[in-house]
Image (cartoon, rainbow, N blue to C red):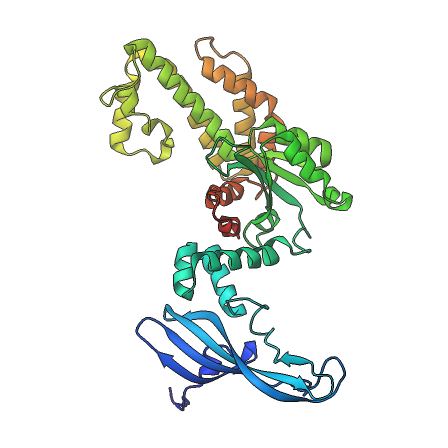
Length: 419
């Protein structure tokens, strides 16, 4: 470091207090906290000492102190003791104080920088409210209320957050685990950045309920120009979402994402395995039953099987009583192989052929496969649309829903973890 300069540390710059209109004039460091004494920088236009009512010059009256929680330094809670001068007009008697709006909101207990740190800690770092409160040295309710208000302002009340949306994803989420009211919410996500490769998915909104009407009402509330700009709606197999999209954004293409399509096949495989297990043994699977022991191996892609898993499946399928499970497993593997094909045109052909094969000629004994075939045939256009539009999977929507905790009645901070 030949050009390095070492001088008296400037705590104002180091703590970014100059951006808040403050200057450090003293400090006290303890093992578990830090206190910085600050003063408010004089206004550049020189208007600080002039009465806002009559325009006459005021005289300094006294000084008050305001406590603000700031960004923790080294995870040591840092408190600012801001000295604020008060003035009294020599003509009308009006009393006012120095402007600290750059440092914090009126009556706020956190600086603007500390508030931003808390919001990013919950949204980006997935910290808990308790952890953020500990870092700031404030009560849980103080941190939670502040983060909620700032999150709504930055993420929810931004008037431009609906701009440029062309691809949306919709899914349901269990918001609370109680019997009172509707425990589900419908989550709407902006997938446009994912499709365009410009960034992650964004949470657009959450509405109470899981129904066609809930999604339809939300779409109807958007401006017509916005609805006309929506090109794709990614969703699961719930027909209510599809119907709502067809009625409110008829020009948008519905895409049923691979996650839910594969889950349909996986559910069919599980149902077949349980049915065969019960028919052969007369009871649900025990830990030593071959079908029960292989339940996870059956859901593993053929290309990822280990030698031990291959031997287990060979032994399982050697039993003629398991032929229906083997047939259903084959359908499941064909679906996985189609989605894993890198050439999207070939992948689409493979999936179309699978849907066609399941729509005709399925033996009556394979009741689960027949049901799967009817579902895929009904939603064939939505399933195949995925291969024509790269980057329109509803997977990011699922990921965001997993980040949203259930409503506990004490805090809404989970709203903002989906950033």
